[in-house]
Image 1 (cartoon, rainbow, N blue to C red):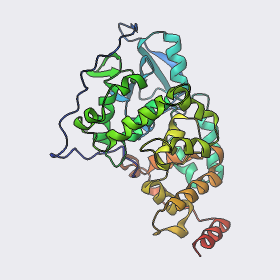
Image 2 (cartoon, one colour; image 1 turned 135 degrees about the horizontal axis):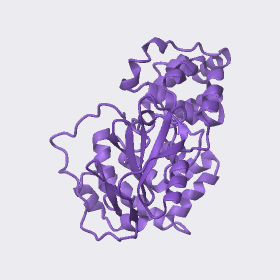
Image 3 (cartoon, helix red, strand yellow; image 1 turned 60 degrees about the vertical axis):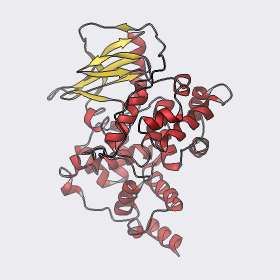
Image 4 (cartoon, rainbow, N blue to C red; image 1 turned 30 degrees about the horizontal axis):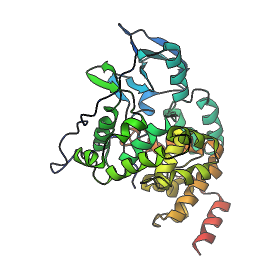
Length: 361
């Protein structure tokens, strides 16, 4: 499965399914507080620690929308929030549009942003290990890895299978519309992500009618599998945060439609498994260009996926997934022009080259 690109997505073909619209299953209501005029508060993160355009439209999540020049909005549980940056201002501000507790919204937002992790310290460590990373980091500061709700992340990446950004977004919008309506920002409707119980009320046929294709059976199958977990699917998913990476990935791969790549995405973007490396053809190209040049031109296999992940962890350590995310962002069309002068590959270490040659013989 190719990792979806976050820039210039291809449009849905004329033969695609009709526009997505949610089934008429009733939606449960909950009491939420909606604010009036937006009130902005400074966030405990500067632009060095969080740059919105390098974090949200990069394929980690498909639920956050651009609602201003440098403003992105989305829901975190029952909280509808916006994040904003202004040119020439180093601060990042946030606004709570809807919540059952503004203080809880702030705490949920900081958790969602992995705010306790210092990018400055990580980037310094990575730059010592990799001179090219240091050059990239000078231009791409503030690219954070998110910590999403596991169910929300899981369903999004089931939608991403062999898909493009435009169609993934439509599918995710359809799923989101099944949840509690939280409000409207800049003409865009926002919803709380639906619960497992709510998702279970949508049939495979309804998902297929909405244009999900073969992914419909994976979503309904995964929902059923999660509901059958002792203690409930939400608790089971959260328990994966306490497992070793390999065990968490293996557990995720027991769900319908989840392979190693999707499992690694969920592990990195939702489970706090910071060394997870989602390997697809794009990451493979990065690896063979800068970390494993002796394998350039080799066809990517499941075994080589493991070697790529090991190469990233060997190079960058326990937060290798964060390094891989920045290297991936640097390959997006919007950033490549800026980084043309930094495209010279790093010379491979002799030990790495020797190991690679031994594995090929």
